[in-house]
Length: 186
Image (cartoon, rainbow, N blue to C red; front, side, top):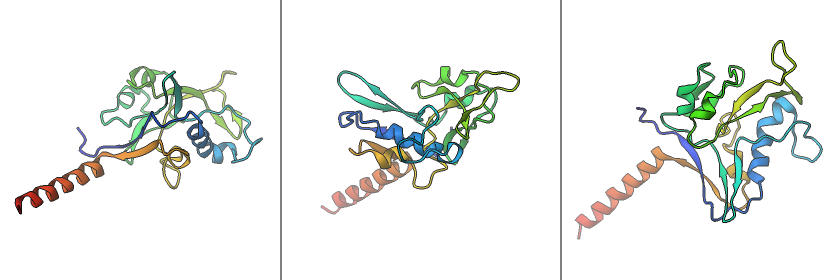
């Protein structure tokens, strides 16, 4: 078992209004380079496919995304080794993904999708076929994006928060030590 706990995004569902700003931000930052998606209307020529998905229920809305599991079932089930832990983030290498869907079935949160791959605004075809190539698609905490998760920065209601369990545990230990030292002086 790994002692380095991964960071992940959590949402306060009672504050989410369902505006989908998180989905748009996610899609935009992951498609600027390969698909020339810009921040203006009319620049999107491919399907909008964010790496998190807003779930709407009658009582509330909630973004669903990868929890960056410590013992990640998706990673463990990937026969092609397309899913790996990179800098603490469970990451899908779409060039290695064979589209077998094992990771989708293994994920207890339903946080993976099989989506078409697009490069330069065009769908990538499977080798020797007219079918569109698909890859596992999930939150990668914007690992290659400066400034971290775009969904968190964009949310107008501060619903999303990046949780780092190592830092959280350290802070709680320090607070407990301070509290104990103060009670010892009474």
